[in-house]
Length: 364
Image (cartoon, rainbow, N blue to C red; front, side, top):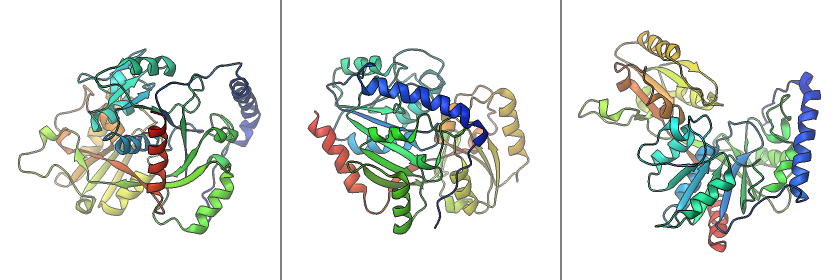
């Protein structure tokens, strides 16, 4: 079985060489301690990638939160991409996607017992989180900070998309890499994400050869598991109705899929397996829906079968749609969110979990 090919804009290679030269120089300055990285007394785990979005950082961050939260006081620190605020901000009951960003708000909504903070300056953000008491923070997860080298994390987890391995990509703008694939050397753990179920051994071996990891690095493979859909506005679902919908129940439904994520293809492919029909409205990652786009969603929805129609969106998009002032009350009861969970393939979950637990325990 061959690995999917990646389309590269080869005519942009000269610009990529310039960009790669700049990022390589920057990394060398950090490696030589001319630019300084800071270590912290609390265990810090960085979950990131070499590419621009779309590898599943937030679901994998949630996987680690779920792994550690019952034993340790976990905090997640993000920059809060596209939020309407600036500086350090600790989430609270008044937070939403506008104040802390869609992905941090998604994490806080799913794990209200943990601390979620945002700060463009990760060093300052870590300092502020470490000041928090009752209880003190045991471990900090950095969501999407692989290139933020002013922080020296104790454990780096590098993600790469099965459909676009970093070894088959190019540096911006010809490809989607933020730095050359040599940046992989900072990671102790590499995870190939969005794999198909039952990935055969021979293909795993092909991928391992392509990635050409170092002996000290561990390689894992993960896939997305789609659980029951739940309403974005549960308070508007009629009394007595089941709040959640199994994908098997979509077989007689006309679906409008609304996404503003980097890689909607896996979700759409899954829904097409179950739904009677699927229409799509896709936008760019972290898309901020405007009034005309909300009206377009409503128009497309009204054109579906009146008695068998649903709008399905992602957890991340749901955080933005939920607070949109132009969203019609008429369609709110029909908007459902598709949660995703990470599954580690090939019975390697215990090994990965133990590696993460050992790092946190040994660095308390």
